[in-house]
Image (cartoon, rainbow, N blue to C red):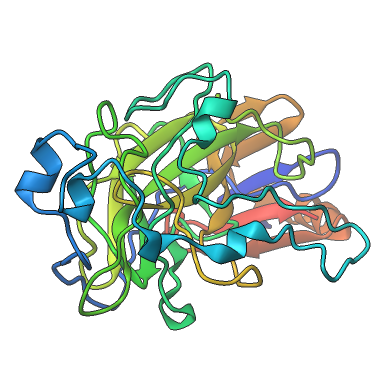
Length: 321
């Protein structure tokens, strides 16, 4: 007797690694994007004219206005000492000349590979009720996508006015974080990055200089979700997909409290072709019928079969646990 089961076997050293062969299904999120208006936005004159010491306009003056001096910066935080707590740097002038104490060049809106010192202040910080967060809906954690095949990343974003993306070659970290005047949410954008792993169980840290795919998303969210097309997909392998939520000038978003949930999301996915071998991870695809004795043998080895909307819906997939 023959049992006509078309199946996929995916195993890694006698344990489940992930599933193979399939196509990613796009998802949509909910919510709405709004037009952003910065609180206290600088005027065109402020932006284009040189600052002078005798200017009566605070935004065009080389002098520090006493109204913005943070007297708390005089405290090193050690009035109440706790184990593991270190003293803060202190300042009586808001660290306005801090970069003079450093040997690194001024950032000056550039991405300097050797490091730099940035004099721009952190900027406006939202209320705790407006801290951003994100969650990938496609691919979802644990999904398998078809290798070297187009797919779309979809991520739901909350409390971030997306689509505000300045020139990273000239204005990188060149302005403070700003919040929207009406919603109080950070004005910015997001990025997505995929890093190749040795396998889904990798515990060694990755190298941030190496990635398989990166995209800064300069478009606004639609229905609360941003999408990124990954043309030609990624090769076979295990991947970590993460977001980087940022202000307009590309600095990671800053929030008002130290204890908070994650502001970004990461998922772990497998990219697999119909017949793929990646180091010790092997995926086999077959359309041959299974005879009953062979099926029984496989069942004794804990064969698990299923169908998945993320894979080919007309096929039954199986793996050894």
